[in-house]
Image (tube, rainbow, N blue to C red; front, side, top):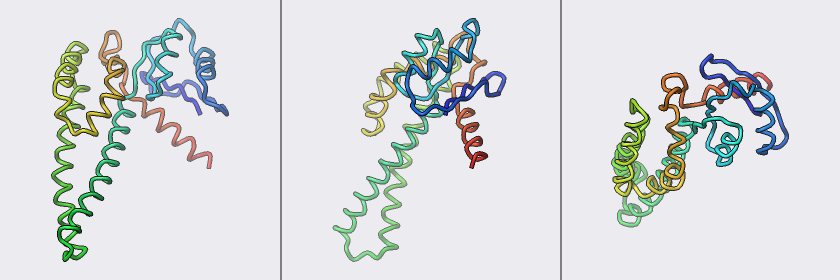
Length: 201
């Protein structure tokens, strides 16, 4: 299901259901929905082909920060689950006399420290999107690049692979004339689709 949502007027513009998600289908849907003279900026999820498509259509393009955070949280959860398993195995090996409650307490104690570290790095990264101007955000990017290797390996790897190559497209919302007009997330579209699907059941 495709939905175009007007973030300024807080309302859906159009929706359509297609059997296959293809670039040409998305292009056709947008071209048939938005008059060319009204093309300004569009916020999308993080699919790689969207940036090329928006460029062809004449849009400025903003990747959705909501989706970025969602993906980061998913990676964090995966990392914590893997780490928890490793910690449990190590403690069981070294302290086989512990009962389940004691084991759980020791695991949680170690995880608490790791979670605190993760949240610190996550907070440092997300401060990027709190910058007041596009210029300030670009300066903050330079700082992040300098300190990125100090991040936990899984976090640094994800940012290097999924964020760094297209970071400019996460900052379009700070550029004029979009600043303070365009929301940098499109979870309103997600919410709309969710409600629509719930009503259809």
